[in-house]
Length: 495
Image (cartoon, rainbow, N blue to C red; front, top):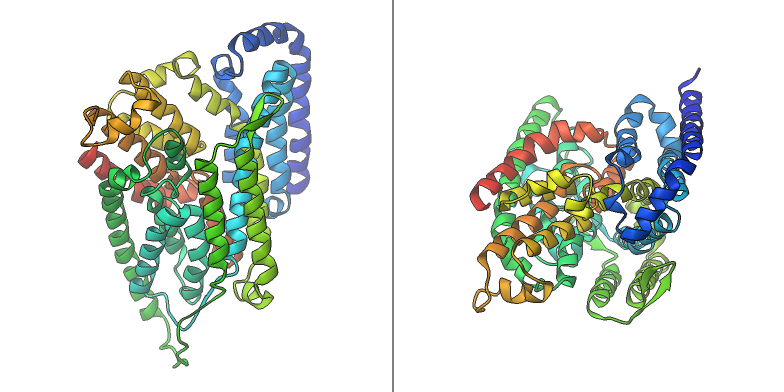
């Protein structure tokens, strides 16, 4: 049997078998399950078993293994693989938990997935119209400066915005380099993650904290030391590694012919207007409270709908106004955003039980694990490791609320507890919140799915002909040996 037929038969047979077993068992468990669900409202995490995360694990293993085992099949059918795992979870979930399950699915798609994809699409579209050209070459010094610029930008236009703006210039200046995978991996570390530490605009967890009374500029002062230490360590490591490869390439290559010097030029800068409009729309949704309407129990807020409409408008304006030649110069295609949209549709569906169990805290299947989280360094590592695989925004919020409960605080007390000159200043809470924030933002770099732009950067790099490491390859070759020691230093110094 061919590889394609084998995987196709698995995709059909396995969910069908699971559904048959669950249909047979449903009369025995549906009554008690629905009674429990009704008792707990939408807090389904208190009754979901730990094995309900198996489809999520299957989704991650598929992303990790199938591209290596059957690359042609994956390239043509990754959307079907994503739909397969989504169905494996969603069908029995709806069958057993009915309206509670429908609420959870609607909530994660209306509140999380749809805005997530719209924001990514808007940034991807707008950034694709900005072209940096010239005879700049990807030397270690140039690459380090580009990574530094991207790291600084990330806190002000978001990690996704900075990644989409900077990835093509980085690819262009390194087009003649032989060894450039490490450039993209360090780009993910710094621009797509750690750089977004200094404002709520930088990364979704920090924006979520801002919506829960964490002052806007506390983030800048609260995480500055940790961000600077991690960034300096990584930039120095990058310069050393890139210099090694650069010297090796120079020794192995023939002396280059003299090329005409083309001055550095940036075209399509009018797209910065649309980028500013997008950022303004995101900020508006955080400040303006316009009410909501109910969709099967899910509160869909008007300001969030307006934000998404404005982002779409900004993206369409960029498409219509930007000359086609600029997008052609960027080798712009829709495949990267299509890949991310299809894969994350499955990830967001299968992640429901993992987030619900985590949110349930001491009332869920991971109660023993949650009880072990006590010290600031525990919060840093547990929030970070979970954020490497789960959505870092709800993970941040879970441990944010745990810290409040631990110290007997409410959200209304947060601004005073973080203000140094306030009589209610609480150094312990500052320490906990710093650890939670740093863990959620920094460790999103540990995997391709740890933060929104990671997978997008990987996909764009592969579209440009760079052979990026697999899911586990990225972790084993880059994030674990490079990031984990960096985070150990940060943890030892600050937490």
